[in-house]
Every structure is written in C-alpha cells, then in structure tokens.
Length: 360
Image (cartoon, rainbow, N blue to C red):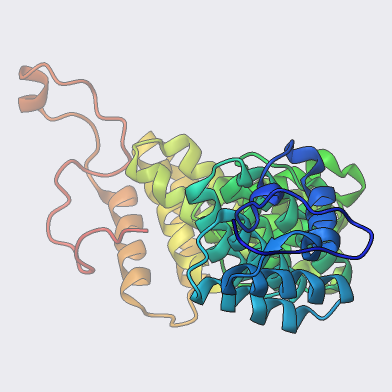
C-alpha cells in the first residue's frame, strides 16, 4: 500500500487513484465537489509523482494561482496521468484563464473517456460565454457558446442572441447570424428597433434571400431617419431587381413585374433603371398592353445615362415593332390550331439592330 500523506487533524483514509473522487457524483453538484476536492486533496493522495503534481495543482488553484495550477496539472499529464478528472481540471483552469481552444481540447479528452463530463463542460463554457458578454468580449463569447453547444446541443442563450447575431454579422458569417437575429426578435420584443430591422435585411440579402430581405427593408424604410433613406432605397431596389430576375427565370411574369415596379418606384439603383424599364416593356408587350409597353420602352432612353446605348437602340426597335409591326396570328398558325397571338410584337420581327433581347 502506498505511503499516505495526511493533513493535521484529518484521519488517514483509504488510498485511491488520483482524481477518482472528483469524477463521481451528480453533475448538478460537480462544481461543489471540484472545490471540495481541491481543498482536501492534499489530505489523502499517493506520494507518487503524478499524485503529487495533482495535489500541488489543487493547492495552487485553491490559492488562486492559476498559472501554477495549470503547470502542475500539465506536469501530472506528462508523468502519465490519463484520468478524465485530470483533463477536466486542466480544462477548467484554461477557462478561468480565458483560453477557450485549450479548454475545449481537454474537455473533449475528458468526455471521450467519460461522457458524464459533458454537462460540466457545457456549464463551464456557458458561464464563460456570459462573463465574456458582460465584458464586451464578443469573440470569446461566441467561441464559448459554440463549445457549449458541442457538449449540449440545443442549449439556449436568449440573453446573448442579439450580441451573437451582431458578432457573426461583423465577421461576415450571415448564415450563422440569422437564427440569432430571429431569436432576438421573438425572445426580446423590445429589440425590434429600426437598426435591427436593417441589420436583418442585410443578413437575408447576403445569404441570397432577397425576398426575405425586402420585408425587413420595407419595414425599416417606414421608420428610418431621412439621412438613411437613400441607402435602404438602394438595397431595396437592388433586391427587387434580383428577385424580378429569378421570377422571370421561373416563368412568373406577374411577380417579376411587381418587383420591377418596386425598383422603378424607388428610382434606385439608378444604373438598373434602363434594364428595369426595358423588361417592363417586354412583359407588357407580351401581354398585349401595347400603350403601356410603349411608354416603358420610351423611358429606357430617358433614364439611360449613356444615351445611345445598345439597350436604348433595342428599346427603340421594340417601339417600331409595336407601332408598325404586323400583329395577330398568321394563316399558317391558325391552320395548325395555334391560339391567337395577343402580343404587341410580330411573331417574326426579323433582324434586330441590338441583337437578342437583353436578359436581367
């Protein structure tokens, strides 16, 4: 039996492997057990090298000397210590020193050997996340939240939702920001400020969901200060244009026209106005709304900063086709049973000065 070292006034106790007492117990009282093991570990540990290093580490931790505690625990590992409670000690001290990556690596070792350490790991990282948030340290806050969720998926952080969303927005990770923005709106009703609406619009736009972005931009536009109207108009118009293009590709001309009208109503971005008017004319012309199509094509040249651009020439050609082209269904088409052509454009307009109709 190994020689035991006892503290004065504490009777000798049965020998045990280093850290075994620290491992057992319900996870709800594990922090308390951790503290008690630190206070009394010197009363009953083997005098072997590994046990001595752990004991010195526990004593240093109790004194608040975290660097010394970490050094002793690392020494115990070098000396052959592989108990999950040793790995948990290292991880806990690393978290106190705000070394999130090191703590994560050691808690993974502990949980890999004994899955009951997962709850303790999640609680430790959750505590660090909230402490980091209170200090304004968003980077460590986000890293700690990610680590906590690794050990306890689905763990909630409602009070951190908005801070997490803005952290991920700042790092360009808009897909990760969106769920936290959504949580903030649901869980913190007072967070629905104009600034938040704009931020959510930007996040949706950046992940390619322009229809979702437009909903927030429209709401923001009603509350935005005059100085920011230009920026939101530009973003809203750009999103309307992109959505119109997707709707046209899907064959939904009605929705495409509705989004083009949003862009034209806002007048921004200006460089997209000529194409928006041209596509409006195309849709109206195919519907047989010839006067409205003529007016849309006429606007192309007026808003085109280049004046005589290929797009303006194409619009002028379309206007000629509407005015002078031969509409209706040809005899051959009628014999083939085709429906009457209501389009304002001739079925075979011939050579085009501007080439094929431009695409959005």
